Length: 331
Image 1 (tube, rainbow, N blue to C red):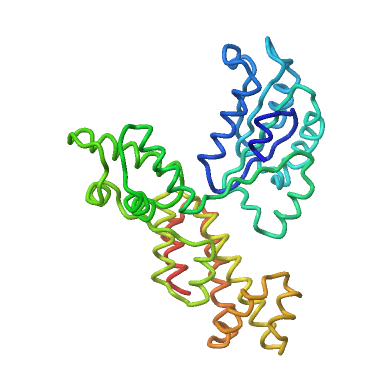
Image 2: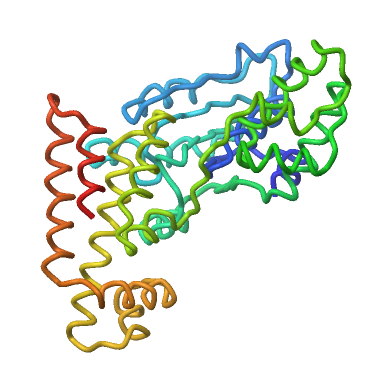
């Protein structure tokens, strides 16, 4: 879809989300280049950040393009399409008012911390967006490997397929991090007078990164693997992720297990429980096997610990990451 948009751009509202930040930013840059002449880009491109910026967006939207047929606004951290309650009315009013302006490209940019598109509420919100939602997910290792090889070639450095695959195994598939790793490796081998990246170069220069699957938290809460959950929290801290986001994910899984435990206690088959709870049947089946070996009181004790952690994180004097480590150790 992005290629079609770039080949024949149309003004309107675009909601950009997904895990692959590199592709999201690349798309914004390419679209900006396609609709705004470079010599007047400063006059017709604006960015704002924050859920309280609706009036500023409105002001910018009413400013007609100068020496151009288009104006582009990128709105970061807006909370849309599920803005905070105190900002919701104004945000939705402004977006509805300006999204049909014939010259305006309104790009609402959401990070994966803000909006994943995976929850029931988020999926419902996507169907109500008046513009075009664009999801940029992480690419598969095979597709990223081709991109990595081209990136090396552009720098005049060769890399064997197996070494490109090894780099991805160490670094992950996020293209921003891979781009940085490729640049480091190119500079490194050129300084050594080489024109090819070898296995030893990658091992020496690029640290091993923990890669967590989409179901890592739920899998390890079911297994009650405190060590694995601590590794996840440590990695999140090193990436400067918001501790509230980690706690929200853990709490959601704890609540899910409590509901599933009650369904099992009441003798409801997992297939029926899945429909009643609006959850994937296979996930509920796995959870049934997990809660069989634990007590109802233990499930609810961990959920209560999540709520206590949430209260602690809202205190300005709390050690947020220390609270999270303590929580997952109690699983």
